[in-house]
Image 1: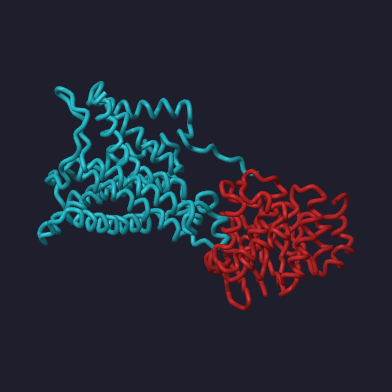
Image 2: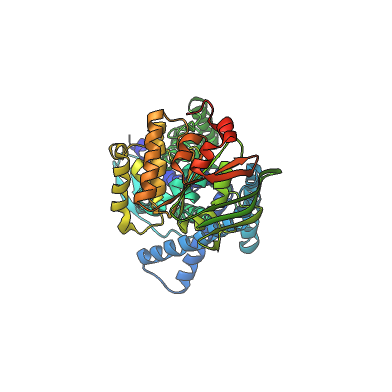
Length: 304
Length: 236
């Protein structure tokens, strides 16, 4: 029981990180129908921005952890959002209206470019960070095992839930969210009611990048090591999460992320760690066979 | 108010509009009739900058709008209820109306919604329903209502009667007249239902193969033999 609970906690934590990245994939797909394969790289860059900010704050003698975390969170979100904005502006906007394949190949190209860009600037060696948030609760202690819920895990789970609530409210209740949903449903009609479509698309990339940047910071805190290559696997997993949940659906992305985190945690705990990725992708294939639009995806509406 | 001169529009290599000239004066209802594929909808979309005209000029209130992006054109006071209605399917009726009001001052919103609900009471009953679940007639009403929410001075309507039962067609045309007379909105209307459109309109244009082939007052065109033969026989 204790062991099970522990895996549940670990899986949820991991799933929250995947979910935050997955939202960026699903939003961009919803609005312009392309898979932004460079999104994983945006996540990776945000982890680097986080570690650099950590070091800078450390040099400045910023010792109080909560304030430092808030500063890092804000800095990372802002700077990563700039990357997201620039990515769309430089690589995707000029291709608006061209065949999907062109945008897809560009996305893969940008992914490779950003990986190499970070590798050149930061070097290929892994970057470690000493634990910033330590300690936690222990409970359900048995003879040789006790469940551990660390402060870091609480931080990740609470922050993600807050972000999700805020974000859902933004999409459902504000004029910006409405404009975004309108663009998603009918880009041309959105322009006809006076929406600046290009601006809305830019903001979508900015929001996706900002959410991914929180995931980047969490990843850094959780694992303590990063390198220029972490965006690839995390990106693929988050993409899988978005597809599993139903690409284009925001709750779907979050659900998909959680499921993938849980599958990974439980598979590693009860079967073999080596095959955890195989398990994740196999389950995605199984779900897609029976529900091609994903768990919460909506089938295409017939246009009347 | 609106002046279209020498417009050419292409879809790839296909020339959909070949030098179209049209004028709409403030306060008028102007009808554009013509067969399928004549270029009527293309003209309405070209006025809204989607696609942009390859040659020629479009002025609205004297200012050239032919090179502006769509959202800037419609922000000057042009609203369109486009071909196929294009209701946002996953948004409620209310949200669709809110989208129509995207660029108006929110202080007008309550009044404007009330105005649309007075024109189309059924929309009030359906206000929490998703757009995609409405019937064709209701979607058409919503499309017109959404266009009105932006407080346009010029309203472009693309085949508002398409696919509707005769009684609904009459109702739609009655409302267009009301909008024009009581709310002082200029209307430019594309129709295949030439009889109704020409009876309603002050003036009309006839389009064929991407060109204007005839124009005159609604009465004149209705009385014209060629038009009767081409567009009215067996119609309505």
